[in-house]
Length: 299
Ligand code: GDP
Ligand code: K
Ligand code: MG
Image (cartoon, rainbow, N blue to C red; front, top):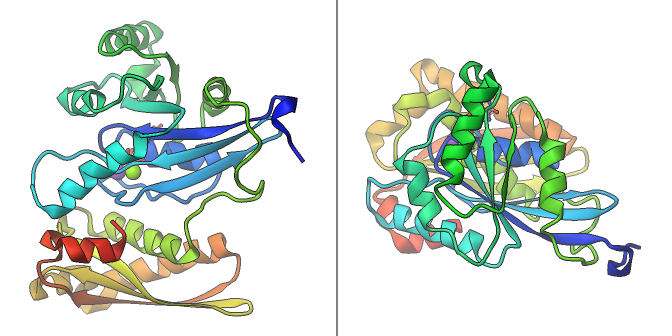
């Protein structure tokens, strides 16, 4: 049993930044497991995902936030923006992620939303990029960004390659209050298996549909049977219009097959058992504008 008296620390960390800076990739590396979906497309992450990393000296509870978006005003986007504000309230430290050598108004929009009374650590990600390998260039970039906000400090990392992640954890630890761990040591997320299954399917959709991805699309787990040695999982992909169905299904069903095969393999790794997975496409008209429906989806 760990006690606060032994100097153990435990606290909450929000990871924020414009879409595609690598927030989800970073969180997955921080906790050493894939629980937050990543993709090349902006706005992959819709739900607040909590990842937990525990070691002998501290427990880090991470909150991954949806990216920011300034176009397409509808109920969904209003909800996304609301979640960012919610995610940073009450945390002990905020990680503001930027992409090395890239800082623009999209980053400033996020920075402007951050509370002034919580320490914000600047994390410069993607230092593996060729142009970021020149130390002087990278230093100049960091100095420039440091002028934009009263940051508590900074760290440079490559989330994708797992570079300097331990250094970042060490710095974050100093902001966590002394406390006993709040979650069991072997717990990596407070999200349900059902939620994680939906996240995996969502990731494959983003990955394989690329630019064709219908804007208004969501994933719903209709049935999740966790049996002895095998899980039976039934997932519906919800699209806006009938004519979007063939985009997801592909010629001869080939796209949907690829999506469900890859999702099944990821689920087998995550849940450590055999998976029977069925994925199909359903039309749900106008859902992106339907606040009640968003509530049902937990958004
Ligand atoms: P998010 O929208 O901020 O959550 O970003 P994601 O984690 O989904 O990452 C967006 C894209 O950037 C993906 O294609 C990642 O593979 C890529 N990416 C993330 N971290 C790094 C990194 O350290 N180096 C490079 N080169 N790419 C990265
Ligand atoms: K993304
Ligand atoms: Mg993300």
